[in-house]
Image (cartoon, rainbow, N blue to C red; front, side):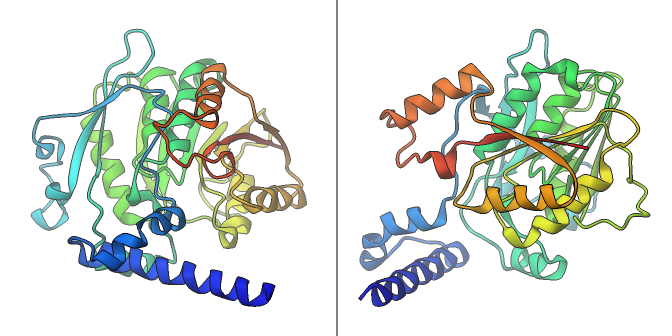
Amino acid sequence: MEANSSSNSTRNASSLRWKILKRAILGGPSSNSDNQSEVGIQRISRKATHSFNLIPCRVKKDSPEEILDSSLSEKKQLHSSRDAVFCYTLPVANAPQLLLHQRVDDIANLSDFEVCNKYDIDNTGLVCQWPSEEVLAYYCLAHPDTFRQKSVIELGSGYGLAGLAVAMTTEALEVIISDGNPQVVGYIQHNINANFGGFGSTEVKPLMLHWGLDKDSNFSNKFDIIIASDCTFFKEFHPELVQTIKLLLKREVSSEAILFSPKRGDSLDKFLLKVKDSGLRFSVDEIYHTEVWKCHQGFVNGDDSWPNYEMDHCYPLLVRITW
């Protein structure tokens, strides 16, 4: 009986994922039968449509094309009809507003899947601005001394909110904002251009970086600080992510990786086992900022601004990794 129940559950989840894919590719209104599965689709997809609301944000009314790089050919320009410009007010005195150009539609393009297959990567950086990225950015803003005059790299950055926030407020020596998806790196470049003039003397660059670097990489033993958020969900990428962190961190001086990630079942635990096996050390903190914890407790206790909030899938833990 239990085996049949498990089998039915697996088939139902698979069916819902196919509906998600169908809806993403075809778009348009759902049928009545699809509407009946809407609750299940939301449960399976886990696409982030809510946040901790730590950094005030609004949609910029001006045309998003104003931040596009005019030196790029029309073919390489971002598809502005799918995008919007978000304006973040950083909670730091005298900080400039941070502009972030990102997708806002729910329709995937077949070229997205082709890129994923070509580079053996996932597409999560284009899906949305994930809540863990906001928490990472907020944490970095609260600890500017950690980054002052340091070499910093963000891994799996998506649209680059945290890396840009560090570059604009902490007087870091350099900030490299990286992702393994070339489409995402295109957005990162546009977002750097959009905020040009707000970095002071900090050098800011985009980088397409695939995890699992060779030990002879030019980035070996280069960075004081690594930051990343929600990068531990896919277990198949754990070995390469750990290898990359170990390679990038400086060895002769104090250095660390600062990661934010929900537990997501046993995914984070399995990642930490890989970290331990690599010879690196780590610590995990559940309560690391009073404001973030206050928001979390509010969602747990019934704040309906984030329906179906679950700590396991939504609340990012702070992981610090060192030599």
